Image 1: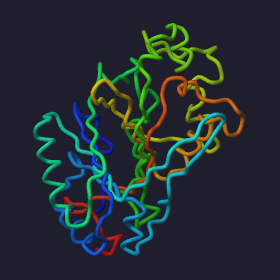
Image 2: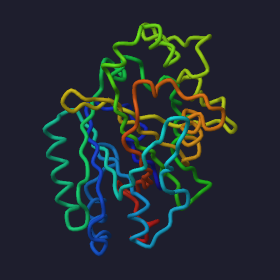
Image 3: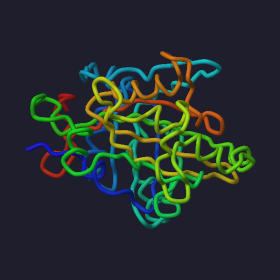
Image 4: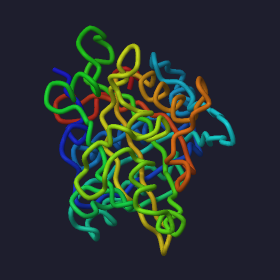
Length: 293
């Protein structure tokens, strides 16, 4: 029986590291993936495969498409595709470092490490802005329905699609904003996380209310703050059964239909954007059978 990679549905870990790889040698890609499948448990090590990698393997996964380079009024979002994405979860920074090094060695014949980004939980699950993140996340069976492909698609059952963006916050600019303006940008009060009923249409919670789309745009957010030196932001990670709900939210944030731009863009912008497919698990290891491996 195929099951999801458990780390997708589990609560966020205290610490994480995100590894992004480019494909360097397609000839050895299949062998490296088989080796990765032996060590990736799907819980502490969650794996996503990019479209360029599957193209090199001459495999098509229905629903996996390029990240859209969308633009809105005064905004243009980057698309930064990659071959492989790995989310390392844990509670010991040293152990995560050593695990990352082992994985890099395993993949070295075919893949080169493009980016490493460390992340962490902050103030009980808040973004670096101080606002709670993922308040509207589905839970329980609803989380499974939103994030994991069901048995009606047997070949992909248990798998998931993930959108990944690294957002960089202008924290100095954010701190200069009056407290009321910050709350209205988000649409919630930072003090008690209560939604502001009369927040403007540009407030983030109004732009992305999942039930307000047709069909509803449910995603399972598993985002975590990141920091490097004095710079920081959010590693936005959203799992779903397709990329449609994520793109619906992103298009509305950009004001593509109504020219109302999400107020979050006043202090934060994405620096990256990529899509990946996360295989299911079978008998305790990554199920690579859809790749004919």
